[in-house]
Amino acid sequence: MRIDIISIFPEYFAPLEISLLGKARRAGILDTRVHDLRGWTHDRHNTVDDTPYGGGPGMVMKPGPWGEALDAVAPAPAAPRLVVPTPSGRPFTQSTAAELASEPWLLFACGRYEGIDSRVMAEARGRMPVDEVSLGDFVLAGGEVAVLVMIEAISRLLPGVLGNAASVSDDSFAPGAMESLLEGPVYTKPPVWRDRAVPEVLLSGNHGAIARWRRDEALRRTARHRPELLERLDPAALDARDREV
Ligand code: 6GU
Figure: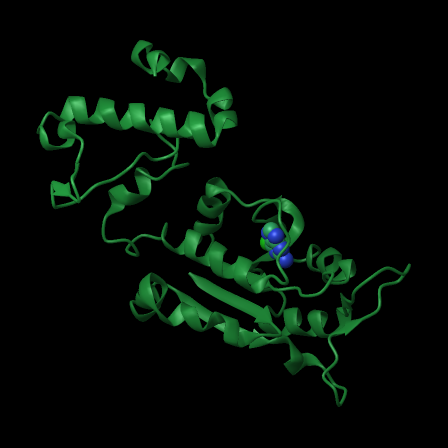
């Protein structure tokens, strides 16, 4: 998958070189390219922002540099999917990550300040799919950190990136039997640590009992942390034992 990123802070993307993402990159699964928006400015101060029309606080990113940047990174008729992080976008969820993971080419446009002049996205829509997406109901200072989050969520779904394909299908929010349940607690060796024992069922070798225990824990944790997810569950997806939990 090719991923281009346009930002006024290319240094934010140093983590793409390490851990899972760095490995995917070295394996040729990910081709990430970071571009400095200021490369498409033409004044002495490399200006990328200006005051908002209609008044109000803060600054808005000027359309000129963005238009040139998008033309240069994705010259027509090339058409990546353009992803614009913004708190006013549609929610980015596990299904958004899966949808974006199936694309051959993504282009992330990182806004700062109060956002990018809206005509940039309107014009881009004329020649490529554009998604304005939000990570949740809070406000970041810019899109860079949000883009790192999204790239990590997308990349771990690409074939060959995770060692163990089951860790993807077992995730909280993964489609399947445990869909929309939070994952329960996990344990490793030693069996007793600081007087705390690992739940006995996990050492029993009884795979049916272990699966039942995990599902009960997932249901309990979901009820405690995210009750609205239980409301959304298809009642047909619950069995009689689930209802007791
Ligand atoms: Cl995607 N961008 C910014 N700037 N703030 C956010 C966000 C995105 N999601 C939540 N807050």
